Image 1 (tube, rainbow over the protein chains, first blue to last red):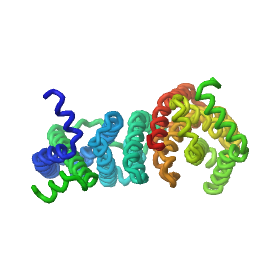
Image 2: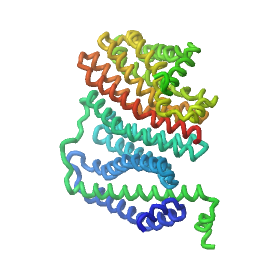
Image 3: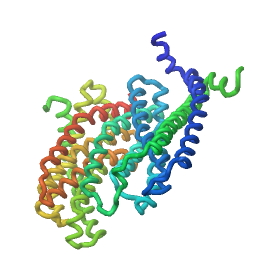
Image 4: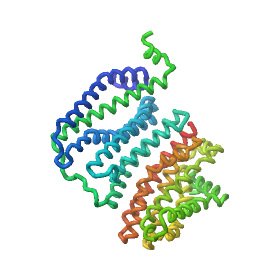
Length: 247
Length: 224
């Protein structure tokens, strides 16, 4: 019993069925959490005394930002697993994680820009964290573009795994350097609403939304994984059995 | 050193380059042409140019490193030299290090040596010229290292040029920030030792770690 679960990870039909069962519970949970968190955050929390209602975009902005950062590590760890143990599933997870992560990062930048207009008076500021997020977006896009550029997809996955690992080592250095760059060039015209800690009445819905977006991310990852499994193994017997029914 | 695969690759790459001297001068010509474009685009006022000079000179160095990176492995990939290297059983890590250092000797080092002259052209104050050369000499090592990673990942692709820039420029952000920042500090008369040390540390880190990625990428591109 001890190690048998590990071997199952090499079996595509098992993963397809297991992820299907997982999704059966996780997807409704994610939808309920997203709806509950959004309604709680958007309708039932007090308005901010300085920003009024415009701050409520925090309930989208912060969760997608958090998940987009975590998503890069998901991608890199999956890439490392596929390089070391040649696990097909890890390889597919890495491929699927790139576009989802890029989308999350883009959403974080977009909601940040929308939030910036009423708060800072401008859509875009070259702030340290925004700049880091733009770099992150390009790191995601690089992995995605490298994968698309190869005709031989087996090579593409390995190359992407290496690239995402190089990126992972670099991310802390990039963040530190961008922080330092910002403190060197800090403009005086923009005042951030820093210093105030967040009130519990606003914090709990935010926490709920973070959990909800993590669930949503996992669901998207699993759904993408299942689709990739079906596509790559379209000619095998178990796929025909899954899709065309029991026969 | 000359007996190890590192020395052999380094000497071979340098020899190959110096047999065609025009190729050695190309990065410098590129640098000169881009520097020429700056006053044309920004206007000839010395105050404007000297204000932007640190950043402009560093961005140009990034682009020069990027453009020359594409061809690092091209010839050796096409004529099978890389495959011979692989079957020779020599350390891929040391060979990759040789490629990185050779690329630096052919692009980064000449740029660093001539950068005070280019700095003069963009009216960079005299206090910044020495720091510019030192920061470029150290920082371009990192650029060569990442350039080799990108080149090793894309050498099997026919149209890798634009892709290469998307792959490696985001990774080079720290070098640009530190390099341009340290020159700016030197111009303003602030101490630069600590930042030069950080740049040196980054280049050592890059030299130590990127050959691992380059070696694996060579194997992947050769489909072994």
